Length: 198
Image (cartoon, rainbow, N blue to C red):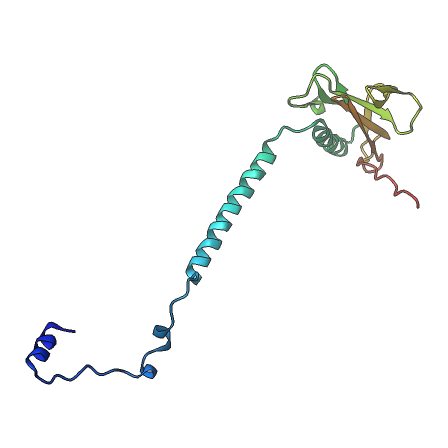
């Protein structure tokens, strides 16, 4: 109560009480206790922050993937594309071999301008690459628990001016393991193995 009204009542003056509003006159929003909830703005800001963090993480992880050194397999497929393109454009046969000492694939041709070397960055000392004949000849040994074929093609393989290559398989030996990739002579792409029969 206001101080003036209190003093007026003490003296005995008749002061009317303030009017009491019926509950219908008070808005329903004021009668209820406010609930704890998030506003639309808070939800949108949270989603925007999550999207920003996700974009940063995805961008960072793709940079990590892009920065890894190419493997011997990656360099081999780069060389195959370059050799096939050089053979088609120059209309000359292009030879491909692997230099064990330099740990690099070497392209050679009758035209010295087409000769190129593709080193394998960070190649370990035990890396060995062999070009094998397309058909298994039976010359294989068990080396460190891994079957390794022992009859590589001498002189490497050839890419022809019509876009084909000699039929061969590539054997990459690294860290005690060996992987063999069969190459299709018509497309110079990996041969897809047949599905097992049921």
